[in-house]
Image (cartoon, rainbow, N blue to C red; front, side, top):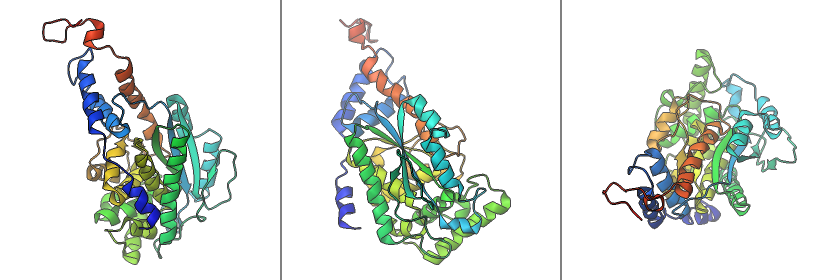
Length: 356
């Protein structure tokens, strides 16, 4: 790990236990039976620990959509051609993708980042952080160099840092790139030691023949590259993607600024697993939005120890599931700021003695 990454990892603090204690105490004073808001209460307490605020304020939100292409598409792993990546990126920049619709509804910004699209994309709203035009075919050799993997992580962290400086208080991980569920499955297999058959799913909706090609490509990539399970950067370099490494960096950068990171689906899960291996403390800053229809996602969530807020059988990516869960986070925070206490409402707290 290079020096800049070492500094980033060591800058991530543990959650604020006093803020969590105060949040829990305030929840118990609100006009409701203790614990009656269920998981919303534990979500609020976690947000308090992350931010250091007993009454968390998370009104400024952004979904960061990192886009990149994958050389492994040469192996026929997707139902769509690689040309779709830049086309969909332009659609997103124009506000026409599903994530744009959901983000407008949730009051979240959409930040699109070109980490490695295999085309020249230009748009006033695009953050161009292109490291290279797509990864190499990991079924034949390393996807990228170690320096490129480290650069992608650091660029992701810098994006979080810049957004925090502009007032963003919460991040959602999003991604775009044909072939990225293949790379994510390879990363997950390499970091966990699990067989590809347990983690490789249908992605864009490949048929049985396509699924077999995809599983074989992941198996071949692992065999050819022999990624080191104990070295997350080696794994990202050999079988990862530029956007996956970028999302891992985004998670670390957000954690360093005490901002919650809402994870989207399977690809975000692979990035989160890599981030947690680089810095175990970063796990405390991650919130799981949903469990996707991609079969490996539930496995990753179990390994990460994260419980999803929603289960909608979604597998679109882009950050869509993450953005949908923001409504629950908004409600959890609003309760802390707006709900009356027993004392302020003049309601008995259950002890038989009305508070004044």
